[in-house]
Amino acid sequence: YYNCILLLLLFIRTPSTFCSVCERCIDNIFNLESPVGLTSINGTTMFWTVERLTKWLTSPICYYNTDTDVQCCTILPITVYQPPDNVSVSFVDHTAPMFEGKQYTLQCTVEEVAPVKNLLVTFYRGQTALGQLQSKNNNPKPVTETFSLNITLSKEDNGVQYWCEAKLELGPYGPQLPPVETSQTITATVFYKPQLEGSLHPEPITVLEGEPLQLNCSALGNSGPSYTWTLPSGSPFTSSSSVLTINSATFADEGKYTCSVSNDVGTATVELNVEVRGAVPSFFS
Ligand SMILES: *[C@@H]1O[C@H](CO)[C@@H](O)[C@H](O)[C@H]1NC(C)=O
Ligand SMILES: *[C@@H]1O[C@H](CO)[C@@H](O)[C@H](O)[C@H]1NC(C)=O
Ligand SMILES: *[C@@H]1O[C@H](CO)[C@@H](O)[C@H](O)[C@H]1NC(C)=O
Ligand SMILES: *[C@@H]1O[C@H](CO)[C@@H](O)[C@H](O)[C@H]1NC(C)=O
Image (cartoon, rainbow, N blue to C red; front, side, top):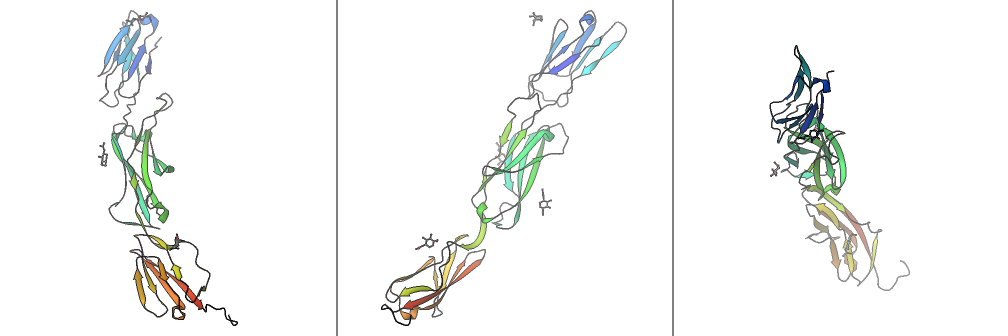
């Protein structure tokens, strides 16, 4: 009637177990052996409580002796869980500028967590989960591990926040709400070449003589773009504005306008053809 049952009652850092020895062993010597914690006995039940586990893989052994031999024993395999000390996210080479269309590696560093193979790491872009990773490391002791995810950045990622979350899965007997640690958020700065906004004018753009002429080649870019207009006369005109305004159009203003939008990443060019008509409608137009 070897009947030693060990149950783990509490998990994180204050585990408590009990060992129940066979009823008929009452006259025998029985004990619960462990290098740490306190043991108390009530009848054939022994309780083992530890204030704080600092050793790893400390397994209590429950046993009893008969007059002639040692009935050994039940070993309780203990998993000591330690939520991470710190979770942080970064881009590899995060000090270098990042450009649209290029691949970058996001990394999530989880410090001093055990056992790392029970950890589920999720990367987020805003509120959207990008991917989940798990460790293959079977080390039961606290370790620091870095998880990586490759992403290709687009211009829409400029200004978006990235972060990661580390969840320690405690299994079916663990607390209903497993420990979750989240990292800080980092904001991606993505450099991209100017992209023209809005739809292009139907060509050609017609304006009446003496009326104002306004050409718009507004574009988005990071860094902020600058605009260079080339007038029909061929002379360039650099402006911080996307809009070229001529207060009163004359026939000399007719022709091809080129708007060249540039930033550190690249240049976008748009051509606009302008026709100036006489204020009095002509029979030939
Ligand atoms: C020991 O166990 C008995 C029966 O389960 C219970 O009535 C009693 O209160 C316990 N004693 C202590 C000190 O826990
Ligand atoms: C967590 O780690 C990051 C990156 O190493 C560090 O900047 C931060 O201060 C740490 N936070 C804590 C609470 O230790
Ligand atoms: C990320 O990309 C780099 C370079 O292409 C590659 O060496 C690495 O294995 C990739 N990492 C992952 C987790 O896919
Ligand atoms: C130029 O075009 C942009 C994009 O279509 C628009 O937001 C802006 O208001 C326009 N500017 C003017 C002065 O019409």
